[in-house]
Image 1 (tube, helix red, strand yellow):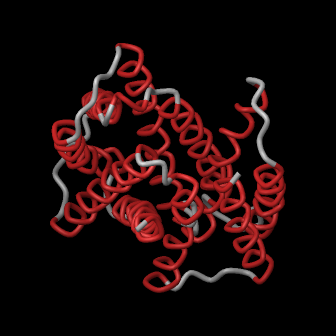
Image 2: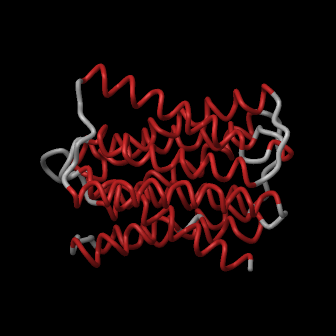
Amino acid sequence: MAVFIGVVVAACFGSGDFFGGLASRRAPTLAVLGIAQMIAIAGAVAAALLFTGSPSGRDLGFGAAAGALNVVGLGALYQGLSMGRMGIVAPITAVVAACIPVGYGLLTGEDPTTLALIGVGFAIVAGGLIAHEHDREEGGALRALGLAIGAGLFFGWSFVLYAETDDGSGFWPVLTGRAAAVTIIVLALLATQTGLVLARRELRTAAAAGALDVLATVLLLVAVREGLSSLVAPIAALGPAITVGWAWGLLHEPVARLQLVGLALALVGLSLIAVG
């Protein structure tokens, strides 16, 4: 069961990122985020009501802050995926995001396992290899790379905040996180006068991204609540491989040989960090 949950989580995260980035290539990123988060908050409401929980104000506050960081990270990721190669942007984001909790643990006195530290080393080397040819490309490649790194930073700190919530809080922190995300998006839409009207294809793609994102989050937290995180996390961390697979299969993105080595190292590093 744990392996199955891990595979589903990885497939949902990786596919959701791909669909969000794909929709952002044809429509404004803010509009795509708006549709995706409207779907996601509906799923968060259902999860909070179906599963019991007694959250404190601290849990709800951390959840809201995590959700705010998460949606900014999603915006950066979608924009980066729309501008650069998905098979490069997604792994770099994941590598940066995975390193943040380990770094936070070191700063706060935690003692990460040797596997986790080795995984960080693999991830850093992988990021350099993946970006080696990418930084030579023209156009918005460098900006896409910067957005990928920024998205990873936001996702990493969002994870730290979610991890600080109490197990007994159920999925209420996820709900306050989605509520904060929707509030930020609405304010941004009003400030930029961006509408939520999308073509039918982009509307379906954005909605799929939101549904997959919230489903992955709920399943991951279910695994954590059931004590299966050590089994699920290493598999779920392979989500970028799904994004890469979509990009290769549907968009026929070319990847240099050195970058393939970097992608392989990134997946190994992410798995070691998750296990550690």
